[in-house]
Image (tube, rainbow, N blue to C red; front, side):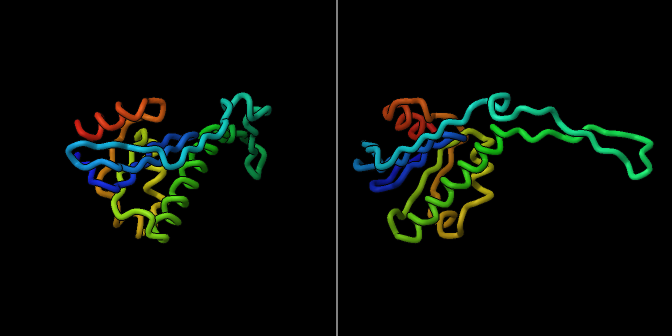
Amino acid sequence: MQLPHDAVVLVADGRKMLFLRNEGDAQNPNLVVEHAEEQTNPADREQTTDDAGRASSPQGASQSSMGRADAHQIEEDRFAASAADLLKRRALGNEFERLIVIAPPKTLGELRKHYHKEVSNRITGELAKDLTGHPVPDIEKAIADA
């Protein structure tokens, strides 16, 4: 995948986001960190204390277990939505013309649900990989190999 000069790269997962900008060119990329954000998101068992509830039918004849919300996943989805909102604000502010998004498949799907039209119009590539914990040279290589 080509990484044009001045393109922005978002590397995200459910709790970290990293904005990089290519200050090099397509042949010799040089990604520089513009913004980094991380939130704590403990495991679901540390965020909830109760078991799933039970629901009775109106006649009281049967009971069924209600599905339990995964607080950890809800928070990861919320974080992806906030990353998409930040992309929207930056796109509307004309802070970038080209965008490459790198995220694990689940996070990438959640981001797509929240893309503004201006963000979608500027996306030149997506990579469904978790690279949030990787150094910048590894990110540059993953883009070049894609």
